Length: 272
Image (cartoon, rainbow, N blue to C red; front, top):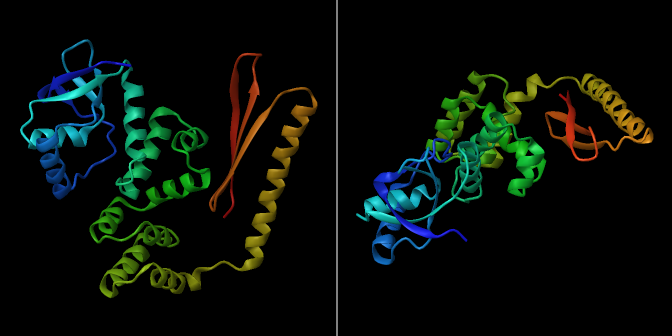
């Protein structure tokens, strides 16, 4: 186990990939008072920056901020040997697993892991112990415009409110719905009924929806047959299928040799 060392707070720098953008002032003051009374009970995880005497926080920025508020000059730390990318991934994962991260912050953090660090939905879902469908639903929240997300958080609306708004096609319709939700104080159930009324005239005929769905199934069956053909030929192909409201995704891996595997490709079919 790594040793615990006390590091000056002025030598500790925040992680640029910290997904948490808001720190509740009341909670921070309460934590600062607790630290002043009892000390920092859980050491911060840090990594040294380019062999200097400065460190980047991997986990524990809230504890650092509260320690500074309480007037403590040194905090207990455990130094971890990792590079910048590993530090970023650890920081994001640690924060996502905290229950007090907002749903938009959590969605943005998941998006960072996939966009900046090349992690697949399967890998992120495994690291977070979440289902891929739950992960996909989180990522869909990022389709909402930034100013809409800010308004939702400011008004204290829930994740289910946000997900209901995703059914609206234009930003104009979204803001019209938000204004009604705010003025009437609509709960989730009433919000969903409002969205139903706004989309009634825009629903596509059922016949065309069924036709598109059947076309998608043809492509899915083609992929399944291709995988079966590879296995029948002695190729140890591994497939992973993910299906959400928006798409069907296949990840297919075929071994290059006995020791390594490489992804063949990702095939996606929109289901709407």
